[in-house]
Length: 313
Image 1 (cartoon, rainbow, N blue to C red):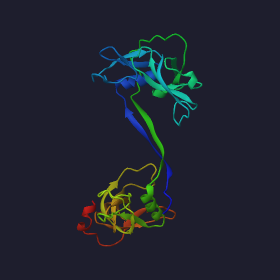
Image 2: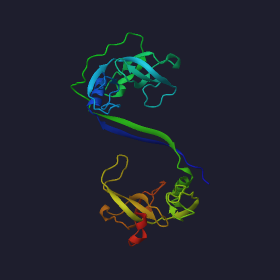
Image 3: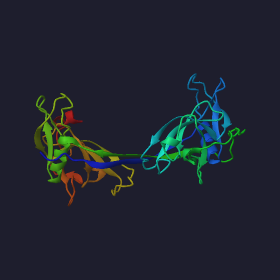
Image 4: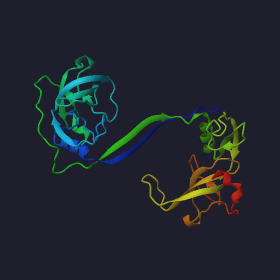
């Protein structure tokens, strides 16, 4: 039994979104060192502002300026900041009710230690040196023992409003494929493809999951399949991926390897994209040092009969 594999994995992508009139005004205000809230029908001021009253669901657009000073309503100490968090040194996450607001804003508080933080303490905004219209325009909050700053009278009208933002999303974690897929990956390193057979329905699943998705019972019996197989269905890719050195158009398909009861996916090459078809017989093409086939190419055999793979579509 080989050791179960594990490896660090990062999932990262930019998330682009447009802003409605309320969020546009809020973020543009931060760029201009103005904090805006929105007033509800019953007179409450919500910060951060929202477009619909969370109690009545009524649309709200009445923007009002609140003060950059406020009061900590609750907090938690962050001993070890992570990449991308507001401060690189330990800090407190705080909910701050700004003067003039009825709700609290979540942000970081720069404090020397947890003993310096308490519910009810007064704080003020520390603005970022460079501001672009994002929540990070508030660099953090800092302790403040001065008088409350009076709210201004800004109405939320700006000459150059922010209309959209790009928020980077990233998730770092350690992935383990588990026992069954570890065996599958290890076999691929030897240019072999193995699945596992269900002891109940006798179907062979590739890649194996460690359990039969139909019967729900554990699988353990390894079965070598392929290397040849049949294209069951496919699509033509016309958009080039940034990190994939393959010219478009190209074909990506589901391939039922001989002896398998589940089709896996792979790129189909060695044939013009407009000649790929269901039933095409293919075989893997390996490159030196690769841990999986680079693509599948036609074997030259007659196409498989539809009846032999229709259950695998």
